[in-house]
Length: 169
Ligand code: FES
Image 1 (cartoon, rainbow, N blue to C red):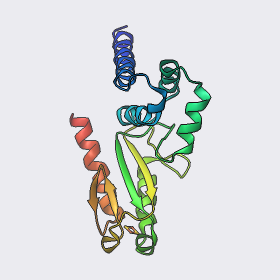
Image 2 (image 1 turned 120 degrees about the vertical axis):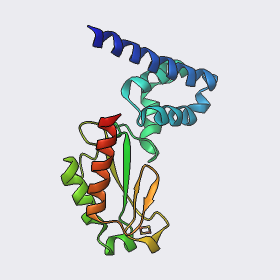
Image 3 (image 1 turned 180 degrees about the vertical axis):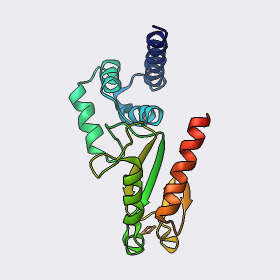
């Protein structure tokens, strides 16, 4: 019962935050992209219910918002993990075996090319193509911290460290 009440409050807070984002943008349909960016910044993805709220708030069709959200690669309709790990597979990193790091992360987090977010929503692994730091290849970025000459062992170590920090929190 307690949990139900907490969840309802959480949902309410989130809905209010979305309403606030809409109000900050004057409920102006021409501000659709910044509105979606701000919601994605908050939720880390665009959920169906957020898109429906935006459609009502801006008085535009849900299908139009999906059209915009799927057109821009920046937007994601799938939940992202709390911690984002980016593995570079550009040429310089690829030849230095960056995919070995990715395989290690997949193995450790139970992920695959089709499922890049861990079921506990703690981690998302994204593959990117050149982070502009080729001299450091292979490059891995964990929550905006750049690791050069990264290895599968370092990736595994960082996962363990983050998990330990999360369970201590
Ligand atoms: S190819 Fe990986 S940083 Fe350039």
